[in-house]
Image (tube, rainbow, N blue to C red; front, side, top):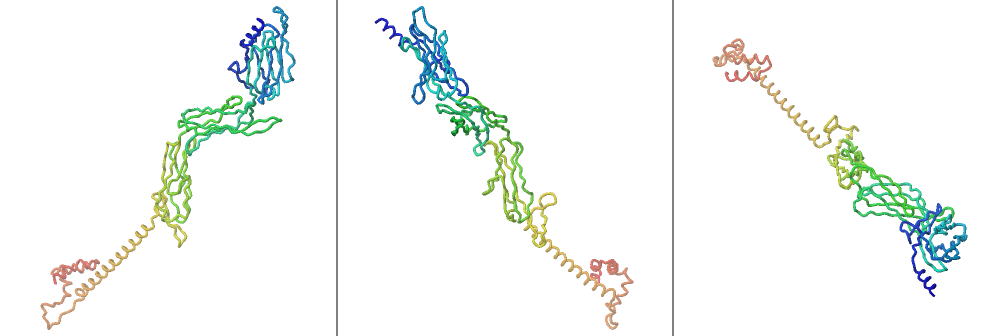
Length: 447
């Protein structure tokens, strides 16, 4: 009776038996078993009461089935006489089970991990067929990611956020749990989206998965520099380097390749060039319905002359620069097929202002006509006065002797009496010089 009570109390005791290699959590832990290499579990701290003692290894598979892997036994002869531990052959060749005299049992899985060790492993200690201690270890069989490829990091200029991705070539987990985590060079507190998209494939009769690990929604850094990204993939919890992101502010203002002058009837097609930066700045032409990096105007006419367009450069959602462009059109000469130059504000070209040019030409023509008419009038008046002067003083008419001779004297003598009528003499002198009009004033007044 006392012996039965002893065994009953002993069966409820915890002696501290543990599967010591089962993860960092110790007893009742979880561990990954890489199927590409042997997997080992150690059951330690085995402290069973005297008697026929057994250490038993069992596997409970995910489907609920139980596999008895192997037993190690120690026969009891007396308290002073214990036989050495002996391990019976395991259930198959996938396993190797050993037991040391220091009472540490080791289970080694050499191959076929998916069916041999995936599930819950139990190390059970018995004495006189009564269970005294048990420890369990949850084993997940994995094929860890060995490499990643096609890593990309880019900036979405619609909202200036960073996204990135890497392709995962081959992974497997017996519990079908997969994840990827990105490590970012800057933390903004803004929620980011991380995703792992996988598909199934088979290789050498085994099922695996492959796909893409990605993130999005990270605000773009605005300080110049190199920003590294890395990702950790489970199963395996191995960290890989993604593509770094280069950030540099745009420098000089934007410029465009639009022509200074365009001929009437031609097509305008030019682009606005962003400054050097990383990522490249966004440029847009903003004029009416035009909102792109390319400015196009078909069949340019005089009505387009002087129209203004603005090209805006934006970067990072905070830096904006603008440059303007004014269309200058020159008229096409339809008669000769040649093009008339118009003042372009510099060089040999001219700005197009056809209406102003026509008005100036008409004004010049009208002034020229007026000047010519005035000139003809003046010349005619001079000729008339000259003839009058010549008929009265050069070839004077003699008076009738019967008439009043003291009034009508022989005027021809005045040519010889210039001292008595100096103004008249001056008239002839000036006539000979070609200025009769100015000199006739005194002679007429003195008549």
